[in-house]
Image 1 (cartoon, rainbow, N blue to C red):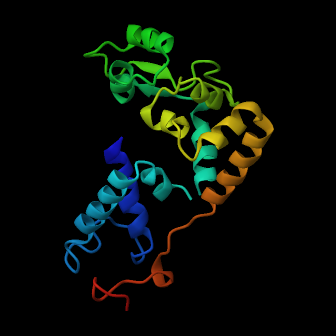
Image 2: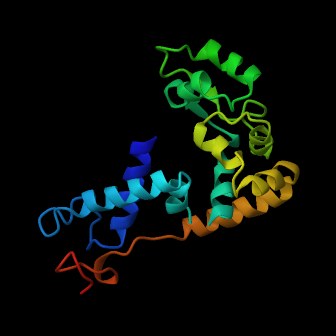
Length: 196
C-alpha cells in the first residue's frame, strides 16, 4: 500500500513538470536527486501526520472521506488486511474472527474479502456505518474514524446517504477535471534548484 501511495505521489508531483510525454525519469540527468528528495519529504510528512498521504492524493479532507466511500463496493486481498486482522485491536472482534477463516495468518495472500461486508455489491453508505462500528477492513479505512478530525464526516455519511451521494459525485467531478500540464503549458526547469 505504501509503495502504491508513494508511486502516486511522485507521479502527481512530476505531472506538471514534464514536456510532451509524461515520464517518471524526466529529470534523471538534469536533477538526479529529484525523486529521492521528494520521497524523503513525503515520508517525513506522513510520519509526522499519518493522514497526510491521503491528503496529498485528494484534492480536501471532506473530499478524501467522500471518495473513500468508493470502498462500499469492491474487494481487497488478504495480504492487504492481514496485519489489521491479526494485530489491531480496533477491528470488531466478530468481523476479525470471520475474516480469519478466509485469511489465515500465513498464506492465502490472494484470498479476497469485501471492503464492505454488509452490502458488498451495492453503492451505498454502509461503508461509513461499518467504520463507525470498527468494521473497516483496511487500516487506512478505519483511520477515517479513529478519534480524529474526519470522525464527524464519517458519522454524517453513516446516517445521511443523500449527503454522501452528493459529496461523492462532486468530488468525483473535481477529480476527473484534473489534467497534467504538458507541452508548453508546463515548465521544464533548467536548474532543478529554482524556478526558471
